[in-house]
Amino acid sequence: MVYFLSDAHLGSRAIDNGAEHQQKVVDLLNQMGKDATAIYLLGDIFDFWYEYVWGQKDKQQFEPVLTCLRGLTDKGIQVHYFIGNHDIWTFGWLAKKTGVIVHKEPMNTEIFGKKCFLAHGDGLVPTDYADRLDARMQKRIRSFQRLRAFFHNPIPQFIFRLMPPCLGNAIGYEWARRSRLKEFAHPCPYKGEDKEELVLFAKEMEQDTHYDYYIFGHRHIELDLILARNTRVIILGDMFKLWTYAQMSPDGSLEFRV
Image 1 (cartoon, rainbow, N blue to C red):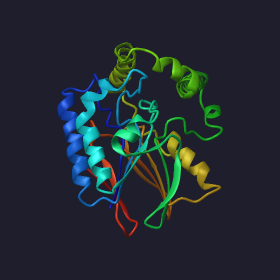
Image 2: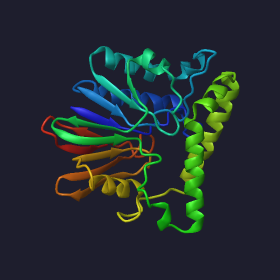
Image 3: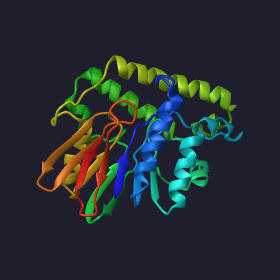
Image 4: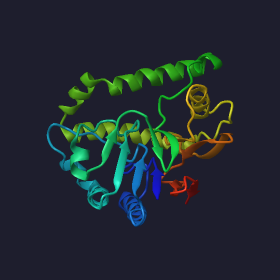
């Protein structure tokens, strides 16, 4: 079996009982490990993750899940870790600690004979998407794109790495907490096939290259949409509210699980 999950947001200050939340994720990963050949973690597994030059003692709170990941990779299970928009900042320590394979860009690959396009999903929009929206939404999208470019810039990343972890984490976790509380207060449900960014992105991609499965995280919604007879768009949901994930069998069939 091959498993896909995303958006656990471990360590979130907006999620009650963080230790219980983390243990539930660990239990699920261990259950997957009983028959998994590979596990794909499609971003935002942590609500905030930064590897500082001062060491990683601040990561002790995540020891249960880090130990779990090391146990999976030691068994020979490939664990692919895609950065999201909350856990961009891994500079090698996570891979060394756990044995996961870190991906910082979308990936196209073949799994059980099926062509798959895999990504967290943030920043993926069709080329003319902003032009379809009103001025207010265009401004919001461009603001997000500028912020995303800033977070991915190696110069600000290096400067932030020089901060003491207590200060950097205070900033990062508070920013993430406000984002989560905003989502709880004003959830954004599925927008429909003609408005959902990741669906439109997949449709544009499909014009040039065929994939059997487009699999994304990021949106915290559960979606299994058939674009064509042999093309499906999957948005995985999350690991703190919906508790949904996808499972691919050796025959290439894919289904949602809860």
